[in-house]
Length: 234
Image (tube, rainbow, N blue to C red; front, side, top):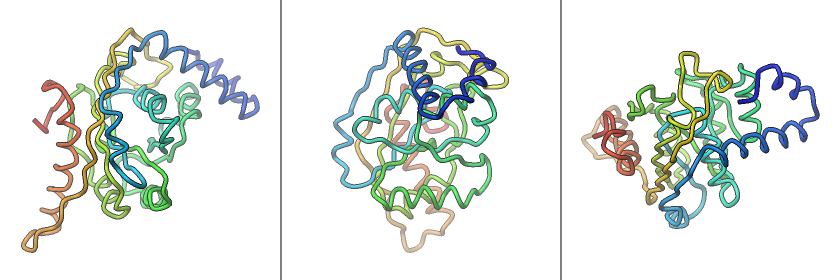
């Protein structure tokens, strides 16, 4: 991968040139190392209006793989943790992706409001409900911020189930893209049919309803994953 030193030098160039270099570099790595298989792309057209894409999270390469697949027709805004901006190489990578930065493991109200406004404005959004990359490849528990965005925006939800990116760009101790090695990998992207949040039952508490909605969303992602990736949502 490109070195930190080179990435820092590139950042001094005009923004358009930086983006061009970043795009060419990332596309080169994807073309060289990844065989990307997409199933169910036609399911996206079954949803009218703004779309909230939700996907499991395995690697720093998830966003750039999904952006490559979705950008031309749907151009989603991605939700990315602010810590990705700290590393010069990772920062270079996210420059090619339209994104909102969010503070992980916090109730980042400003970011959540921005997500809802994007969807209400008719644009598409992609978030990773787990809130962080899985260290094992298996689905971990989702965060309730995802269902808040879904309910407040009333957007159609498109579940995406992703495998192979954890082999394409594995996580190491620090998780920085510049310190990770790209490997040859088969990446499978399964796009499910649109889902909506279930309606609240009269006798159901808010906590029970939130848990049911979150489970509904995460099960939709798990449905498109092989058994060994389903984790807590088997």
